Length: 157
Image (cartoon, rainbow, N blue to C red; front, side, top):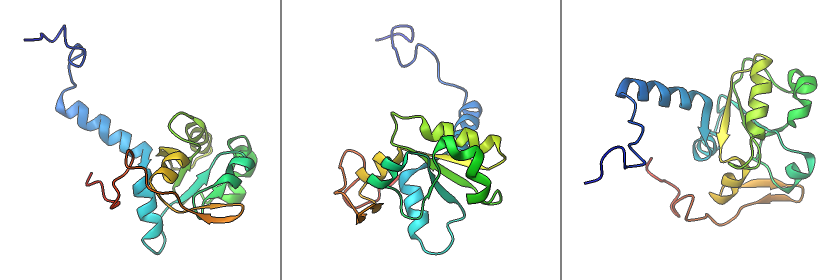
């Protein structure tokens, strides 16, 4: 039998259940899943938040979430108040999980007084999960990547 000190998973013991619940609740206050954002945006009516694409113009033109506001991170201090309502929560995204641009944008917006979440997976996972997106040429959609989402669309989580 492997002891806790030999097991890399248990070398540091799991948190107590109450601490774990507090941590995961806090995580959900800061992050939104791509599929949850897509479901809210396509449900009809006001989703209750605005999506902000914090990437460059060239990236925006390659593809962006339909209805998103284009606000590159560097322009947030000068343009956020003109483009966004502080009463409406903001969901930021950038390229994907290997990029912290959405995190920097969320920080900049929070420092200006906006309630904000970061969309986990960014545009990469939006496209990989097969959601429709806009480009400078019009709408597009990629085939769902079975490694990121089930073909039927519902992962059950």
